[in-house]
Length: 279
Image (cartoon, rainbow, N blue to C red; front, side, top):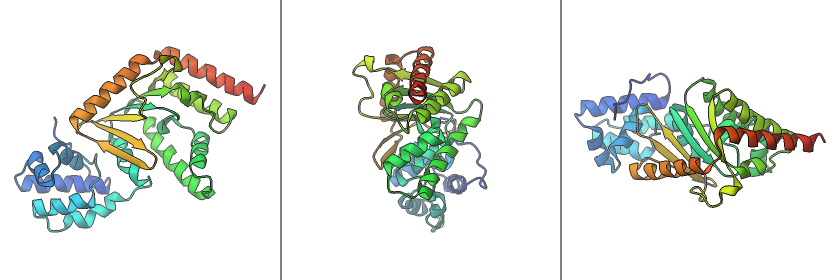
């Protein structure tokens, strides 16, 4: 695995902590694996902290100060890197997503967050929290739309999305919202910015029936997978687990329509929503 690339410490608190961790580790003459043993984690986990891919949690910060003789440096400074505009269960995954060179994602009932329009996102969040204020909903929608700006880069990350047909058929926000949302996905694919495939109902039982899945690859760190449930999420770096999830995604791709046929289906469903809205 290539070593972590040089980081700009001014770019973010996590970048600063990552650079300082690498400096302190090398000064102590320890490898990533040796530091990982002292924290009861893998060496690749230490590499992800150094690369800024993973967020440093307070318990690890305290253990690093003890292992590397840095007094309370990491303990005092990890709080700044922990601040996030995303929910706690998703914050670390969102930060990793922003550094990924490739993202593979399967979703069951929703269009993936990175591909959502503002109106679609608003309808989703309003359904999640029907009593929230408009300000609270707007803050969540804005954070989600800001996440999608990583697709403004013409090539990176490579985003490969497999959508269950249920994500097309579930009417979120009404016909006009769904028409816009589906055509936005089609537009991204037509511009060769993403690869999208539909997993049709006709596929029957498939490898992703337990729920959504996201895989992320990086230039300077091992791959990660992210699984989530309501108000819970877990970022995984165990090689065997990531390999199993990668195999699951490949099986989902194999069971899906081709990218070309997928766009035909999405456009057809978008037309159906448009006709419902304007018969």
